[in-house]
Amino acid sequence: MKTFRSNRFLSLFALGLILTATSCQKKEGCNDPMAVNFDAEAEKDNGTCEYVHGCTDSKAINFASDAVKDDGTCRYAADQFIGTWNVKDSIRDVFIEPMFHHRQYKIQIERSMNDPDSIKITNFANLGDHIWVMAKVENNTFILDHVDGRAPAGHVHDRFFKYVDCSSEVTVDDMVFDFIYAEIKGDLRRGKGTATRTL
Image (tube, rainbow, N blue to C red; front, side, top):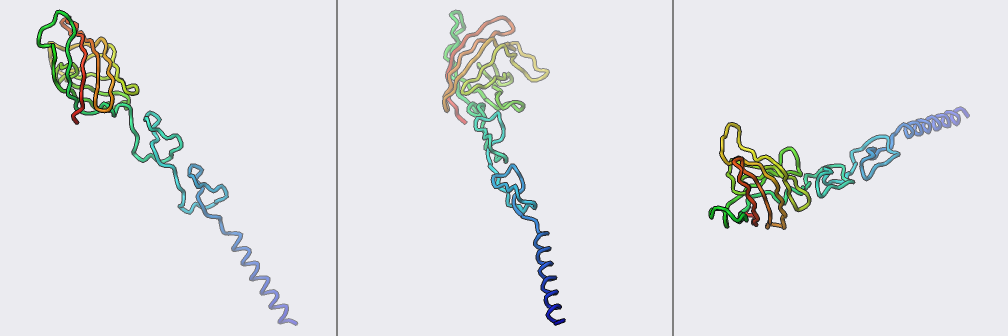
């Protein structure tokens, strides 16, 4: 009789230990609400969280609102202008020197370091590699309005200028543009041109 009671006691004790151990175990899973496989019942994260990858910059043209992890694929409107361009333009003023008719030259366009929607244009309107302007990009167009031309600090140049207006439109590797600028000495230049990207 004692043996029966002893065995029964041991059995109940063992069952109690099993139930206690089971109740102490925490459910494992992904407990990050930002993950696509988030488990609201998971108490312990087991490293299985999965996330939507994509462009997380709201200024990019391929911004993915559901992306949690940035995958470095962000593209900006300014990117379509980046590179070296072969330009052909002509000043349209009636009284203009022959040197301003049917010009050919190169311009270099870079993205602004401070604004992904802006570009830096060097030698625009063939004013020299030491002269550059900034322009704002909207879709496939860049526009600058009443923008000072910039020269390196300490550089003196008699053709330092102020743009009155300029606009351009790009399609893949081809660009058309109109511009007007006033040189410091007073000459007003109006031009129209085309450009083809080389790099």
